[in-house]
Image (cartoon, rainbow, N blue to C red; front, side, top):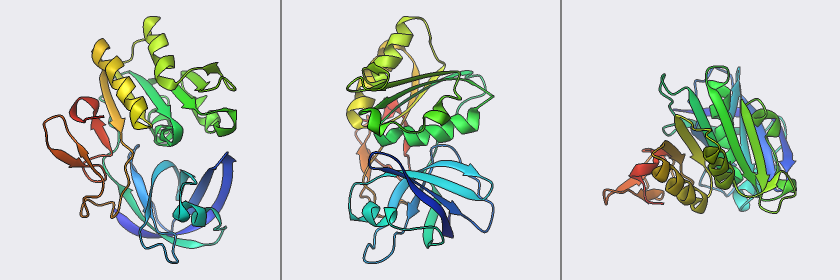
Length: 251
């Protein structure tokens, strides 16, 4: 990891309450899919904002974020040319074994964004099915990325885009049809991941989940983002994760 001085190239709204910010760096960066950055928005906001890295193109890094609090409200106002400190790449990302040829991506809410990085890393190498859930049609984004998958199923809670269901239900329907992956990679709200865990455990599927937690330092020192593990201990989402084997964490 390194604390980069990054220059905003563009910062634009891509869906309801969701923005994409692209930074230019002065040097190359190597990022594993599923890793994140800790962005300083400046001013009176002392804590950085942890945001998943969506894509890296040459020396440009793109993050997608949802407006939730004062920090992200401030971030959305910053225009091209603004320089910010970005600590990255952080955390342990997704890894797919060589013999795992078929990947299922299951994402919901802002959890869809780390999965874009997975699709980009393994595009052309693996057979990828993406099951992506949105709240409604106004929240739909990233479709042009997910349409590159071998199979893309986009759904919404209210049926205003795609079928009326969530991403886990869409994935489960395909399982019933015999579309069985070698590994499942997922990110989204905890209730979604909990439902997915039930499905993969029943089917005996290997599954890795990227957890969403509030963070302070982003490097494992402050213990703000601890999660409970199935062995009764605790793990730091920022340093030990954010990606975990679904069997190892309590959801």
